[in-house]
Length: 371
Image (cartoon, rainbow, N blue to C red):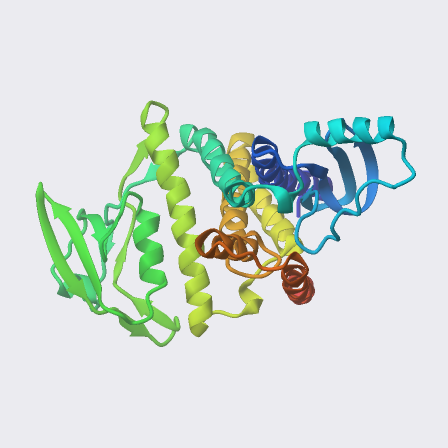
């Protein structure tokens, strides 16, 4: 095992960067759309540090595994009661000026401004992933979708595919990295796949029905790779960094569909403890190859976590950004608003269910560690 201190430090840095990016997206677009933000917090649990700003209070909390951008008057929060009647006219005027400078409450803001503030969190996670990918891809080679081997007895060789073929698309999805082809194969549930590939400048297309392997418990096409890599310490870094993020987006989405279809379970999910375990294993495996290899692998984990956070938050689940977005889109399309108190109840129920899921995942993480 590695030094626990190094693992904990890496975990805290990665989680903090990913969470702060998400919450800063909410904060920035809220302020740009004139929405008051009461609190910008990093972490969960009791407050360790508070700094009261002109518009927003910054709070650092004890557990760096979450964060929040708390808008004034968001759904579930009681409406403002107004100014106390006993205040004199001068004090009321001063408060009104301050309130005008700070902006509107969440419920008072135009619907498209609220939509922008909600979507900004996941969007900033994707932007962060791309920025991190620029660093990672610059210092590492990217895998090209060139087949190293086509195995006898499997559908790929029967369809005429050979080692050296370059996969260009699968079911209309344009392939740039070998990992994209590999995960499309891995996530296949026995459905036919339309594969386009290139050989000696000519393009070919075939339809393959994957073969089920009893020992492995999944379907196989029967190819392996990659046979080639490309260095991107040049202008190619911009395109291949996007391919890297695009692969992470596709892998996250396909993994969710794979789980929903019954091919995976809650035991396959990982929470903070599971992620820390992965970081520890990654450092242990990469350390013999030098500090640069450790950094590249940790960047890869950070990119994956940032993309995961962005995608998962857009799911139409109450208490997540996607659940809030559903209410806002309904309002934008219909022109009718769901009463904030009713929306707040829905999000509260969603939050409770998410907390239960987090407890289950935490239990699985801890039991997996001992297993």
